[in-house]
Amino acid sequence: MAVREAEPVGSLQEVKEAGLDREDLLGMYRAMLITRGIEERGHILYKQGKIPGSFYTGRGNEAAAVGVGSAMGPNDVGTPLHRDMGVHITRGVDPWRIFAQYMGREGGPTRGRDGNVHMAMPELGLHPMVSHLPAMLPVATGMALAFKIRNEKRVALGWFGEGAAARGDAHEAMNMAGVRQLPIVFVCDNNQWAYSTPTYLSFPVEHIADRAAAYGFDGVVVDGTDVLAVYREAKRAIEKAREGGGPTLLECLTLRMEGHAVHDDAFYVPKEMFEQWAAQDPIERFRSWLRDHAELTDEEDDEIASSVKRTLNSALEQADESPLPDPAGLEAGVYAAPEDLDTPHHK
Image (tube, rainbow, N blue to C red):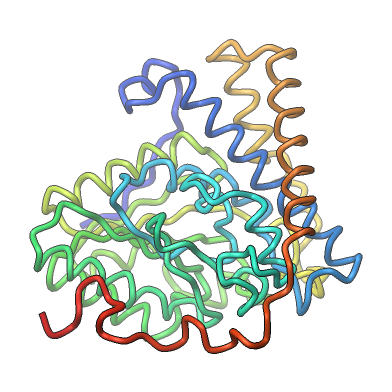
């Protein structure tokens, strides 16, 4: 099995064949703007001292996150990480809840019991991450195994970075998924720097997706700044898995346009590299595509931008009004009794 490098999306007709209409396209554009806007405002909150700990963003990864999130079916599940804010937005997480999460408030998805980006909402098919990033791949693989055992036409998606690919749990998850031909898509956010370690010091192959052949399934490399190409390839992989075709390793190639976290100025990244990838900014790229192929006007663009600004300003106000968690409820949600479970383990 040879790794396939995906072509860019060229025309509106190709998009229509992928099942997207103009309203869908504008929705994806809006989701990308909201994603970036949330993280830009997060920087301000951090500087105001309202975010405890550090602060992590996915600037430059908006197309990859929104593209994959948009391709998921309503009953599919996933484990997005700290660079994948667009998945949360696409799946329907309210921006105010994300701001509340940042600030450790009761209104956040973890209700103030965990800070920053360790969040997700299982009712929307998203399951919370932990800091040891590839540790979520066995979780996603386990969900895919459950779907196969139950003969459910559902797909799990597991995200990881190229740095996380060096850990054993990434190998173990993909090996099991390949052996059992599970309905899962592994999404690698290859932003080329594992903190300060460049890819050429992380793995000896050209692409992380090259590894897929060793596990017995397909590998695809896609330009992670092209939201429509990401959507097309993610949709193909998800539907293939849904119909029993097994896993796919989808590698979205991007650049982390900010440091590992707010405390890191990324001095180790060559200036020329930043300049090169800034010219491929995913939002600017999609805006230009919409103007050329979907008749996006200046007035329409301005209205979308204004609507996003209003949404985020309102979300910040709502999050700021959310109370801090009551210490008396510290143990709430920590322990589960069998009657609390939808499907007790013994059934």
